[in-house]
Length: 489
View 1 (cartoon, rainbow, N blue to C red):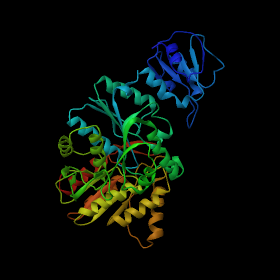
View 2 (tube, rainbow, N blue to C red):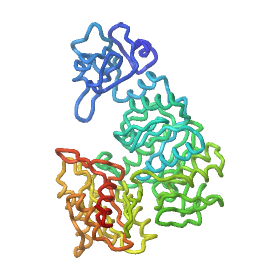
View 3 (cartoon, rainbow, N blue to C red):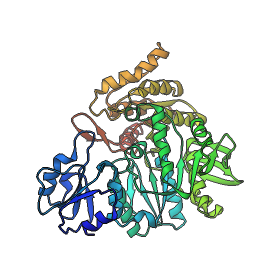
View 4 (tube, one colour):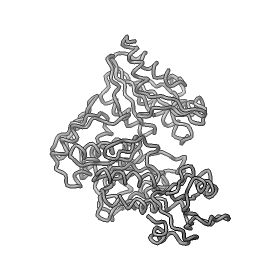
């Protein structure tokens, strides 16, 4: 595309300097990624201002710039477009450059505090089983219909979203399912996107280091409704009191509820939980989901409801659900030949670990041993609450490191302890800062039929410290300890 054509198309580009013809095919906001065919967007971030790096982008080849203020040293061979707020138009420009791939596929947006990853994987798996090529944008990976790429964050930057959508459209995807985080909604990463289906899995405390209070957090989630197509459908968990209240006055949407307890449009009945599966009925059809955890029924209900909303045959959906194999790092069973059960789960919020522990307690035979910590540089106020929940719902707990990042891991554990000590002064539990040693202790000292649940990192294959990032996979560390327990080398 000619850059001047872009200026003519976009009314938010209010002024230009230069008349040079430049072909552009992409947009970047990192000067290190700039080159001749890429527009450089100078926007202010949390730590610095992109206007400081215009010259660097020029040196790296960019000749087209979108800016808020014209620089003092305008280059004669460059082209400058001024806009009032560069931070708000990244997605809109990317949509034009990539020729609006979002209009060619059904977009499905999933938000909520917990369950986003599992729900998106379910939807993708169900649709693909039914022969519908589906792309995925999520916490674990970006999948273009043929190949997966590691994800950097839950919801990518706006330009990365459109770059991914263009790839998905090229590969023949008909639908795309996307995790939509509160950060993404607050920071405008889903600019220009319209969803044909949206689901709210649940809502509880999270990311208050960013949103400041729960009201702001909830409102940021509800912003996703602004991106629902006029004929689109929204699905929500009516058993979640906060979501029930939020949706009761939203009459301008084509909304549908799902539940286990309360009356709803899609209510699971005859629920039976097992260690490795869930059996339930919906509209007198029996589903056999190869995952455990009552919370996964909600995830599955939202996925089923969305597929039914697209007019997909009910019996085919039953088949699709029954073949689902689970999600990496979500209530994942670590295969072993010992006499204990080890599970790994990504839950890292009070509500998340509460849901998992409550589910395990419904089918446990002996003790539940929970190994967990809290991430550094994140909401500190949830740490005492997580300590209390872990102590109350597990039979034994081992407090350890998660991703301490720039914080002292010992201090993080002390923050978790404050809740336990305040409520249970005589409480006894273990503290092992080294995560590997904590997992090893839990496995080596567990008794026959005990269940060990390792929280926090799930699918992650690293551990992040102030000065380094090391290889660390809970599943591999657990497997090594299990092998040692069984007498293997």
